[in-house]
Image (tube, rainbow, N blue to C red):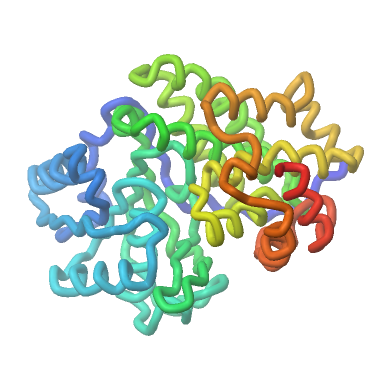
Length: 372
Protein backbone atom coordinates (compact mmCIF):
# COMPACT_ATOMS: atom_id res chain seq x y z
CA UNK A 1 0.00 0.00 0.00
CA UNK A 2 1.31 3.43 -1.01
CA UNK A 3 0.77 5.62 2.05
CA UNK A 4 1.30 9.32 1.38
CA UNK A 5 3.17 11.38 3.94
CA UNK A 6 1.26 13.80 6.17
CA UNK A 7 1.92 16.23 9.01
CA UNK A 8 -1.13 16.71 11.22
CA UNK A 9 -1.66 18.68 14.41
CA UNK A 10 -5.25 18.70 15.75
CA UNK A 11 -6.16 22.37 16.19
CA UNK A 12 -9.80 22.13 17.23
CA UNK A 13 -11.23 20.42 20.29
CA UNK A 14 -14.51 18.70 19.44
CA UNK A 15 -17.28 18.73 22.04
CA UNK A 16 -20.22 16.65 20.77
CA UNK A 17 -23.54 15.64 22.26
CA UNK A 18 -27.20 16.52 22.57
CA UNK A 19 -27.56 19.55 24.83
CA UNK A 20 -23.84 20.31 24.96
CA UNK A 21 -24.55 24.00 24.23
CA UNK A 22 -25.21 24.20 27.98
CA UNK A 23 -21.44 23.85 28.50
CA UNK A 24 -20.76 27.08 26.62
CA UNK A 25 -20.12 29.20 29.71
CA UNK A 26 -17.65 26.82 31.31
CA UNK A 27 -15.81 26.29 28.02
CA UNK A 28 -15.53 30.04 27.43
CA UNK A 29 -14.08 30.41 30.92
CA UNK A 30 -11.54 27.66 30.17
CA UNK A 31 -10.28 29.75 27.26
CA UNK A 32 -9.64 32.62 29.65
CA UNK A 33 -12.31 34.84 28.14
CA UNK A 34 -13.94 37.81 29.86
CA UNK A 35 -15.83 39.43 26.96
CA UNK A 36 -17.37 37.20 24.27
CA UNK A 37 -18.78 38.42 20.96
CA UNK A 38 -21.36 36.05 19.44
CA UNK A 39 -21.39 36.32 15.64
CA UNK A 40 -24.62 35.12 14.02
CA UNK A 41 -27.37 35.98 11.51
CA UNK A 42 -30.99 37.17 11.70
CA UNK A 43 -32.46 33.73 11.02
CA UNK A 44 -30.57 32.17 13.91
CA UNK A 45 -31.70 35.06 16.12
CA UNK A 46 -35.31 34.13 15.34
CA UNK A 47 -34.55 30.56 16.44
CA UNK A 48 -33.42 32.01 19.80
CA UNK A 49 -29.94 30.50 19.90
CA UNK A 50 -27.82 33.70 20.25
CA UNK A 51 -29.97 34.86 23.18
CA UNK A 52 -29.54 31.49 24.86
CA UNK A 53 -25.79 31.53 24.22
CA UNK A 54 -25.53 35.04 25.65
CA UNK A 55 -27.44 33.99 28.77
CA UNK A 56 -25.19 30.95 29.28
CA UNK A 57 -22.05 33.06 28.97
CA UNK A 58 -23.34 35.74 31.33
CA UNK A 59 -24.40 33.10 33.82
CA UNK A 60 -20.75 32.01 33.89
CA UNK A 61 -19.75 35.52 34.95
CA UNK A 62 -18.56 36.78 31.57
CA UNK A 63 -19.75 39.70 29.47
CA UNK A 64 -21.37 38.91 26.12
CA UNK A 65 -22.73 40.74 23.12
CA UNK A 66 -24.40 39.57 19.92
CA UNK A 67 -23.54 40.71 16.39
CA UNK A 68 -26.24 39.21 14.18
CA UNK A 69 -26.01 41.06 10.87
CA UNK A 70 -24.19 38.36 8.91
CA UNK A 71 -25.44 37.75 5.36
CA UNK A 72 -25.33 34.54 3.35
CA UNK A 73 -22.01 34.31 1.46
CA UNK A 74 -20.45 37.00 3.68
CA UNK A 75 -18.50 39.86 2.16
CA UNK A 76 -15.79 42.16 3.40
CA UNK A 77 -18.60 44.52 4.47
CA UNK A 78 -19.92 41.89 6.90
CA UNK A 79 -16.42 41.41 8.29
CA UNK A 80 -15.75 45.15 8.65
CA UNK A 81 -19.04 45.68 10.51
CA UNK A 82 -18.24 42.77 12.82
CA UNK A 83 -14.74 44.13 13.49
CA UNK A 84 -16.18 47.52 14.47
CA UNK A 85 -18.50 45.91 17.02
CA UNK A 86 -15.80 43.59 18.38
CA UNK A 87 -13.35 46.48 18.75
CA UNK A 88 -15.87 48.75 20.49
CA UNK A 89 -16.93 45.92 22.82
CA UNK A 90 -13.35 44.91 23.60
CA UNK A 91 -13.96 41.26 22.75
CA UNK A 92 -11.36 38.72 23.84
CA UNK A 93 -13.32 35.70 22.55
CA UNK A 94 -15.19 35.28 19.26
CA UNK A 95 -18.02 32.78 18.87
CA UNK A 96 -19.32 31.85 15.41
CA UNK A 97 -22.88 30.62 15.94
CA UNK A 98 -24.84 29.55 12.86
CA UNK A 99 -23.98 28.20 9.43
CA UNK A 100 -20.75 28.57 7.52
CA UNK A 101 -21.43 32.28 6.92
CA UNK A 102 -21.43 33.11 10.64
CA UNK A 103 -18.32 31.05 11.31
CA UNK A 104 -16.48 32.54 8.31
CA UNK A 105 -17.38 36.08 9.39
CA UNK A 106 -16.08 35.39 12.90
CA UNK A 107 -12.82 34.07 11.43
CA UNK A 108 -12.55 37.04 9.09
CA UNK A 109 -13.12 39.41 11.99
CA UNK A 110 -10.36 37.66 13.91
CA UNK A 111 -7.83 38.30 11.13
CA UNK A 112 -8.52 42.03 10.94
CA UNK A 113 -9.05 42.62 14.66
CA UNK A 114 -5.72 41.06 15.64
CA UNK A 115 -3.50 41.60 12.60
CA UNK A 116 -4.96 44.76 11.02
CA UNK A 117 -5.17 45.57 7.33
CA UNK A 118 -7.87 44.31 4.96
CA UNK A 119 -9.30 40.89 4.21
CA UNK A 120 -7.49 40.71 0.87
CA UNK A 121 -4.17 40.90 2.76
CA UNK A 122 -4.86 37.38 4.05
CA UNK A 123 -5.99 35.83 0.76
CA UNK A 124 -3.99 32.62 0.63
CA UNK A 125 -2.40 30.67 3.47
CA UNK A 126 -0.43 31.67 6.57
CA UNK A 127 -0.33 35.46 6.11
CA UNK A 128 -1.29 36.42 9.68
CA UNK A 129 1.90 37.30 11.58
CA UNK A 130 0.42 38.06 15.02
CA UNK A 131 -1.49 35.83 17.48
CA UNK A 132 -5.26 35.69 17.07
CA UNK A 133 -8.09 35.61 19.60
CA UNK A 134 -9.54 32.28 20.67
CA UNK A 135 -12.52 31.28 18.54
CA UNK A 136 -15.38 28.94 19.32
CA UNK A 137 -17.50 27.54 16.50
CA UNK A 138 -21.09 26.38 17.08
CA UNK A 139 -22.70 25.11 13.86
CA UNK A 140 -26.47 25.10 13.52
CA UNK A 141 -26.33 23.37 10.12
CA UNK A 142 -24.75 20.05 9.18
CA UNK A 143 -22.90 20.94 6.02
CA UNK A 144 -19.94 23.27 5.61
CA UNK A 145 -17.57 21.77 8.19
CA UNK A 146 -16.23 25.29 8.70
CA UNK A 147 -16.03 24.59 12.43
CA UNK A 148 -13.10 22.26 11.72
CA UNK A 149 -11.28 24.35 9.11
CA UNK A 150 -8.74 27.15 9.33
CA UNK A 151 -10.09 29.00 6.28
CA UNK A 152 -12.53 31.90 6.05
CA UNK A 153 -14.30 32.23 2.70
CA UNK A 154 -15.08 35.93 2.24
CA UNK A 155 -16.26 37.77 -0.89
CA UNK A 156 -14.77 41.10 -1.89
CA UNK A 157 -17.69 43.55 -1.61
CA UNK A 158 -16.59 45.40 -4.76
CA UNK A 159 -15.38 42.65 -7.12
CA UNK A 160 -17.49 39.80 -5.64
CA UNK A 161 -14.45 37.53 -5.92
CA UNK A 162 -14.43 34.87 -3.19
CA UNK A 163 -11.22 34.94 -1.18
CA UNK A 164 -10.10 31.85 0.75
CA UNK A 165 -8.10 33.20 3.68
CA UNK A 166 -6.42 30.48 5.71
CA UNK A 167 -4.10 30.34 8.68
CA UNK A 168 -3.60 27.70 11.38
CA UNK A 169 -4.20 30.43 13.97
CA UNK A 170 -7.67 31.06 12.51
CA UNK A 171 -8.95 27.58 13.36
CA UNK A 172 -11.51 27.34 16.17
CA UNK A 173 -10.09 26.31 19.53
CA UNK A 174 -13.36 24.52 20.30
CA UNK A 175 -16.15 23.27 18.04
CA UNK A 176 -19.35 22.76 20.02
CA UNK A 177 -21.49 20.20 18.17
CA UNK A 178 -25.01 20.08 19.59
CA UNK A 179 -27.43 18.18 17.31
CA UNK A 180 -30.42 19.85 18.99
CA UNK A 181 -29.42 23.15 17.34
CA UNK A 182 -29.85 21.65 13.86
CA UNK A 183 -33.43 20.43 14.36
CA UNK A 184 -34.77 23.92 13.59
CA UNK A 185 -33.25 23.92 10.09
CA UNK A 186 -35.84 24.35 7.33
CA UNK A 187 -36.13 21.34 5.00
CA UNK A 188 -34.37 23.15 2.16
CA UNK A 189 -31.40 24.08 4.36
CA UNK A 190 -31.24 20.49 5.65
CA UNK A 191 -31.01 18.97 2.18
CA UNK A 192 -28.64 21.58 0.72
CA UNK A 193 -26.19 21.41 3.60
CA UNK A 194 -26.55 17.63 3.85
CA UNK A 195 -25.64 17.09 0.20
CA UNK A 196 -22.75 19.52 0.64
CA UNK A 197 -21.42 17.45 3.55
CA UNK A 198 -21.70 14.26 1.51
CA UNK A 199 -19.85 15.90 -1.35
CA UNK A 200 -17.08 16.98 1.03
CA UNK A 201 -16.66 13.40 2.21
CA UNK A 202 -16.52 12.02 -1.33
CA UNK A 203 -14.33 14.69 -2.93
CA UNK A 204 -11.80 14.83 -0.09
CA UNK A 205 -11.44 11.04 -0.37
CA UNK A 206 -9.84 11.17 -3.80
CA UNK A 207 -8.03 14.50 -4.30
CA UNK A 208 -4.37 14.62 -5.22
CA UNK A 209 -3.69 15.72 -1.63
CA UNK A 210 -5.58 12.91 0.14
CA UNK A 211 -3.56 10.89 2.63
CA UNK A 212 -3.91 8.02 5.07
CA UNK A 213 -5.03 10.55 7.67
CA UNK A 214 -7.61 12.40 5.60
CA UNK A 215 -8.98 9.08 4.36
CA UNK A 216 -9.97 8.12 7.92
CA UNK A 217 -12.09 11.24 8.26
CA UNK A 218 -13.48 11.11 4.70
CA UNK A 219 -14.63 7.52 5.12
CA UNK A 220 -16.26 8.04 8.52
CA UNK A 221 -17.84 11.30 7.32
CA UNK A 222 -19.43 9.47 4.40
CA UNK A 223 -20.61 6.60 6.60
CA UNK A 224 -22.28 8.99 9.05
CA UNK A 225 -23.79 11.33 6.46
CA UNK A 226 -24.94 8.56 4.13
CA UNK A 227 -26.58 6.78 7.05
CA UNK A 228 -28.15 9.91 8.49
CA UNK A 229 -29.34 11.78 5.40
CA UNK A 230 -32.36 9.63 4.51
CA UNK A 231 -33.28 9.29 8.20
CA UNK A 232 -33.32 13.07 8.61
CA UNK A 233 -35.53 13.44 5.53
CA UNK A 234 -38.02 10.95 6.96
CA UNK A 235 -37.77 12.11 10.58
CA UNK A 236 -36.71 15.78 10.71
CA UNK A 237 -36.89 15.92 14.51
CA UNK A 238 -34.81 12.77 15.08
CA UNK A 239 -31.91 14.12 17.14
CA UNK A 240 -29.87 10.93 16.70
CA UNK A 241 -30.05 11.24 12.90
CA UNK A 242 -29.27 14.94 13.18
CA UNK A 243 -26.24 13.99 15.27
CA UNK A 244 -25.02 11.65 12.54
CA UNK A 245 -25.18 14.46 10.01
CA UNK A 246 -23.58 17.05 12.31
CA UNK A 247 -20.65 14.85 13.32
CA UNK A 248 -20.25 13.62 9.74
CA UNK A 249 -20.09 17.21 8.48
CA UNK A 250 -17.43 18.06 11.09
CA UNK A 251 -15.34 15.03 10.13
CA UNK A 252 -15.68 16.04 6.47
CA UNK A 253 -14.38 19.48 7.46
CA UNK A 254 -11.29 17.87 8.99
CA UNK A 255 -10.89 15.81 5.82
CA UNK A 256 -11.01 18.97 3.67
CA UNK A 257 -8.44 20.64 5.90
CA UNK A 258 -6.08 17.75 5.18
CA UNK A 259 -7.05 16.93 1.60
CA UNK A 260 -8.91 19.76 -0.22
CA UNK A 261 -11.79 19.40 -2.74
CA UNK A 262 -12.15 18.76 -6.46
CA UNK A 263 -14.05 19.35 -9.68
CA UNK A 264 -17.59 19.21 -8.29
CA UNK A 265 -16.87 22.30 -6.21
CA UNK A 266 -15.12 23.93 -9.17
CA UNK A 267 -18.33 23.44 -11.17
CA UNK A 268 -20.54 24.68 -8.37
CA UNK A 269 -19.10 28.17 -8.02
CA UNK A 270 -19.93 29.29 -11.61
CA UNK A 271 -23.48 27.95 -11.21
CA UNK A 272 -23.84 30.11 -8.10
CA UNK A 273 -22.15 33.15 -9.64
CA UNK A 274 -24.05 33.18 -12.93
CA UNK A 275 -27.39 31.55 -12.06
CA UNK A 276 -27.72 32.07 -8.27
CA UNK A 277 -27.88 28.32 -7.63
CA UNK A 278 -27.59 27.59 -3.89
CA UNK A 279 -24.18 26.07 -3.19
CA UNK A 280 -25.41 22.70 -1.91
CA UNK A 281 -27.66 22.26 -4.93
CA UNK A 282 -24.90 23.31 -7.29
CA UNK A 283 -22.47 20.77 -5.89
CA UNK A 284 -25.11 18.05 -5.74
CA UNK A 285 -26.28 18.41 -9.33
CA UNK A 286 -22.68 18.06 -10.60
CA UNK A 287 -21.38 15.41 -8.19
CA UNK A 288 -22.64 12.25 -10.00
CA UNK A 289 -21.02 13.41 -13.24
CA UNK A 290 -17.71 14.23 -11.55
CA UNK A 291 -17.74 10.81 -9.87
CA UNK A 292 -18.18 9.13 -13.27
CA UNK A 293 -15.44 11.32 -14.76
CA UNK A 294 -12.98 10.46 -11.99
CA UNK A 295 -13.94 6.79 -11.95
CA UNK A 296 -12.22 6.37 -15.30
CA UNK A 297 -9.03 6.18 -13.22
CA UNK A 298 -8.92 2.59 -11.83
CA UNK A 299 -7.40 3.65 -8.51
CA UNK A 300 -10.19 6.19 -7.96
CA UNK A 301 -12.87 3.72 -8.96
CA UNK A 302 -11.43 1.34 -6.34
CA UNK A 303 -11.76 3.99 -3.60
CA UNK A 304 -15.35 4.71 -4.57
CA UNK A 305 -16.16 0.99 -4.59
CA UNK A 306 -14.79 0.68 -1.07
CA UNK A 307 -17.17 3.41 0.05
CA UNK A 308 -20.33 2.02 -1.50
CA UNK A 309 -21.16 -1.46 -2.76
CA UNK A 310 -22.78 -0.41 -6.03
CA UNK A 311 -22.75 2.49 -8.47
CA UNK A 312 -21.85 5.47 -6.30
CA UNK A 313 -22.84 8.05 -8.92
CA UNK A 314 -26.28 6.48 -9.24
CA UNK A 315 -26.58 6.39 -5.45
CA UNK A 316 -25.89 10.13 -5.21
CA UNK A 317 -28.56 10.70 -7.90
CA UNK A 318 -30.99 8.63 -5.83
CA UNK A 319 -30.31 10.78 -2.78
CA UNK A 320 -30.91 13.93 -4.82
CA UNK A 321 -34.22 12.46 -6.03
CA UNK A 322 -35.15 11.49 -2.47
CA UNK A 323 -34.45 15.05 -1.32
CA UNK A 324 -36.45 16.45 -4.26
CA UNK A 325 -33.41 18.34 -5.50
CA UNK A 326 -32.81 19.11 -9.20
CA UNK A 327 -30.71 16.55 -11.06
CA UNK A 328 -30.16 18.56 -14.24
CA UNK A 329 -28.76 22.07 -14.62
CA UNK A 330 -31.37 22.76 -17.31
CA UNK A 331 -33.74 23.18 -14.37
CA UNK A 332 -32.06 26.55 -13.74
CA UNK A 333 -32.56 27.78 -17.31
CA UNK A 334 -29.06 26.87 -18.40
CA UNK A 335 -28.65 26.09 -22.09
CA UNK A 336 -25.89 24.76 -24.35
CA UNK A 337 -24.88 28.35 -25.09
CA UNK A 338 -24.01 28.92 -21.43
CA UNK A 339 -21.59 26.01 -21.13
CA UNK A 340 -18.40 27.74 -22.39
CA UNK A 341 -18.60 30.60 -19.87
CA UNK A 342 -19.40 28.16 -17.05
CA UNK A 343 -16.44 25.99 -18.06
CA UNK A 344 -14.07 28.97 -18.29
CA UNK A 345 -14.88 30.02 -14.75
CA UNK A 346 -14.79 26.44 -13.43
CA UNK A 347 -11.31 25.87 -14.83
CA UNK A 348 -10.04 28.90 -12.87
CA UNK A 349 -11.31 27.63 -9.52
CA UNK A 350 -8.69 26.81 -6.90
CA UNK A 351 -10.15 23.35 -6.21
CA UNK A 352 -9.79 22.25 -9.85
CA UNK A 353 -6.06 21.68 -9.37
CA UNK A 354 -6.70 19.03 -6.72
CA UNK A 355 -9.06 16.85 -8.77
CA UNK A 356 -7.55 13.35 -9.08
CA UNK A 357 -8.06 13.27 -12.84
CA UNK A 358 -6.60 16.34 -14.57
CA UNK A 359 -9.45 18.53 -15.75
CA UNK A 360 -9.28 21.35 -18.29
CA UNK A 361 -11.77 23.78 -19.79
CA UNK A 362 -12.90 21.30 -22.47
CA UNK A 363 -13.49 18.66 -19.79
CA UNK A 364 -15.63 21.11 -17.83
CA UNK A 365 -17.75 21.77 -20.90
CA UNK A 366 -18.40 18.02 -21.15
CA UNK A 367 -19.18 17.78 -17.42
CA UNK A 368 -21.73 20.59 -17.67
CA UNK A 369 -23.15 19.06 -20.88
CA UNK A 370 -23.61 15.71 -19.10
CA UNK A 371 -25.56 17.52 -16.38
CA UNK A 372 -27.66 19.57 -18.81
